[in-house]
Length: 511
Image (cartoon, rainbow, N blue to C red; front, side, top):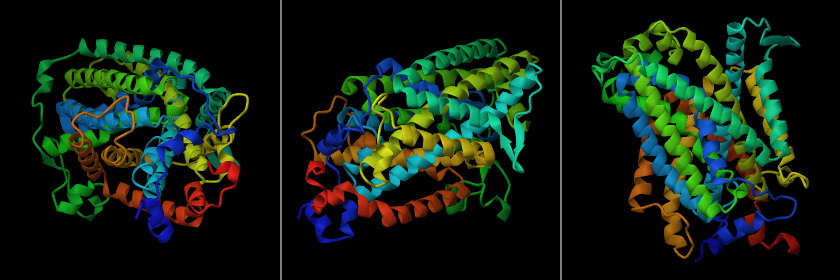
């Protein structure tokens, strides 16, 4: 019995129904729901760098070095980059084969079935919504720091109807929402300018940092493992792996390097977002792989150089003693406090483009899910003038702005990583499935040594997930349960794949 026939025979088996690649490509050309192809390989490379080279390059490495890995944080970055690179190869194969919006959601729908596609789409919403709100929140915080540096006395927090409101996130999200509505190409041009500026600032920081380098600071390169404490109070803050195996929570040593890799993986989340723009790329079969791998290579080199400068400037113990360690911590420690001003401006500029790319990615995932009927179809209507999803962009902007402006969304920072890694796991598995089910498809890029490398990618990503805290996992499970309820309450009944299989679509829509 075919999968489609099985889906008709059993309501439960309908969860396994897939959407053909040909249908996905046809739906992307549906009048009134089309996006405009205008991006080049250069745009994609800068797009990936824009979201990866953000505040993380100034802070996440310092935190990983001080709290987890010491100078071996460079190994953490290498492990995270290799894991991301393996997953990105899987994304590149899919993106060059199915060049439509939706990223991991679309790829999973074509291979593993509707329910898992919904779940991964739900995970992507979590990743992009949370990341957008967290980054916008930090943008407001660093805006206040820049105001202080230049002695501009404007409060960044005001009271509105008795509620404390950070106005910075609302302003920046509003500006980029308006820009994205005007068109992806225009947004990409603004993004390119800001990204080149912040890469220049990062290079400046690296050069200055290396001038303070002392070789003795790299000894010991991998600090000896040390327990972080025990007791019930630590249950929620230790990794799921430590909790499940009964291992004593530890920092430094090999466990610290692995925990550091799970943390710095945040630095590489931009490249799955790039895949969501597949429907807006010129010559996607060639452009997508070039843009994705070019951006990953650029970001990896920058992060390794920053980590080298950081851990060479000061002993890792200096970073460990700081409450919120960052590059500024290291520069102040060596008497170059002036560099902290440059870093603060660099962070503000860096965060600016991250917000734009995340807003775009969120709207494109929702567009794909809405076009398939798993979310209300009226959301996927695009502007006749600009070919952008105006309704979705406004909704996404409002949600991100409200979360960033009125809540302490930064406490959900690890939710970004678990959402990304879960998507990477399924996409890696899906490559193997599609190779077996559709060997006839033309593939402009093929993951080498399949199925070995995709399976290794899935295992590495899942292992990094296990190194996130138990509290993060609990929140993740709750999010999945809510998503499952939404699917059964709405998505499953309105799925266009299901309606098409039952012959319930109008004739002019059943193509």
